[in-house]
Length: 211
Image 1 (spheres, rainbow, N blue to C red):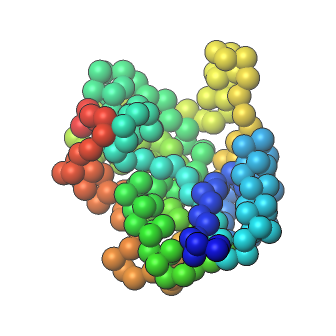
Image 2: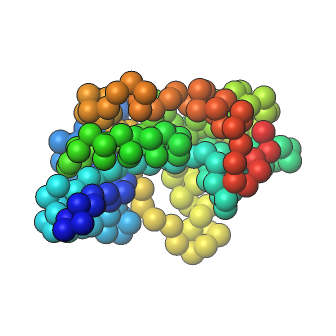
């Protein structure tokens, strides 16, 4: 604060319980994390705001886009489909995919606007993981038939069988961005999944993605 710097803390949709079918959360909705990750991120939100009430708390989720590590979901999906492998994706697990370049632009825009408090910084569309994967495959010309349907309980059981443990996750964790849109110029608003994927394909960086 002495130097005039801003505090920006990235949080998550996992601060919510995600138990209500069809629920899409606003910044004012009651929190209620169901796993350790969500609980620690929520504790971080509280601690940051207590220390600096002018901080920015940015809740985001489902981040995809170019990166050096090449590990986010779209990289994994493209690698699997490109190699002719099936990719099981839950039809009952909902979230709001976020293009990383848009997340960066939203962050800078909010800092420049001297915004403070909690903002949901995600894409404009809430969808289940299977629908997102099919959207990615269709947009990038991959074989969407290899995106197989499964429910999240089956995926959880498979992870436990493989690793011996798995975190409990809420199923309905969409977030709305009305507050974000009102605070930012249109130039900083997030793109649709289709437009974001096409932008990534036309402007690759980081690890190669097998489009």
